[in-house]
Length: 296
Image 1 (cartoon, one colour):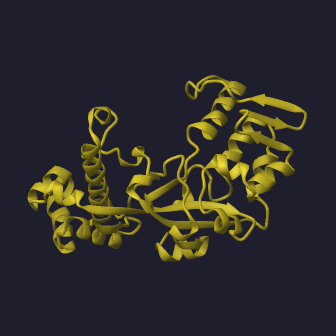
Image 2 (cartoon, helix red, strand yellow; image 1 turned 45 degrees about the horizontal axis):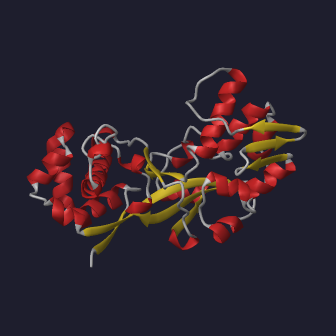
Image 3 (cartoon, helix red, strand yellow; image 1 turned 90 degrees about the vertical axis):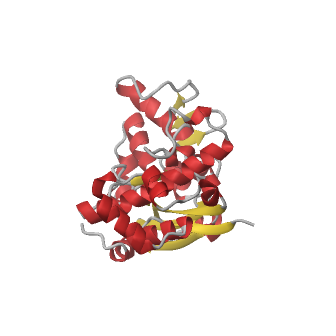
């Protein structure tokens, strides 16, 4: 039976502890390696330095921790009922966003691939071929992209501030921006954004490595888009593990030498939901800022 490890990079300390559990190398030695190597660290060099066997790494069963930002009006009742779900489910099930769109006279039929807005019907069934075009065509492509290509649960393995993500998720669902632009109605975004009952939460959850989309693992020392089609399952697995090691080392390096870290995104597979019992912590904005020592 494989040893189960919760791999948590959301904080510097948990990154070091997670690498320690995965590699069986003392955390002080890992930290010393980064300090001595400065910018010359790397996964292959790290594994060679400490004589870490790839077979040993594959003997561990990994569960990965992520941070997800959401806003809601219902005190998280829908999250307790459904867990974290993808965009198609959010607009279909009885959630605050589903009810909000209904109030706005917006009905999105995923099966028929159409949007009903007041007396208008918008066809969203065309084949998506990129975020190109101008004006209305471009905004239509964005909506199709969000509904059928980029509809998974998006989160962070680590980030300097989850609340500052460019999609404006601190103030409302990113998808409302796309709808507002497509339907040319600023109130679609603003009435959610400025609603006094709206609350923002940062949700910490854990899920098996296999529940994460492969895009979560692209890195210099792990997987990349050029080689993944030529790898078998075992090679993909070790590539994912190497990617996690690289991301953990980079977290430590950037904190030590730059006193800051970059965003490190994670993506749950589109057909996967996160049940409520896999949510380990729910933070209000204030609680998150205090817990993670965020400076705004």
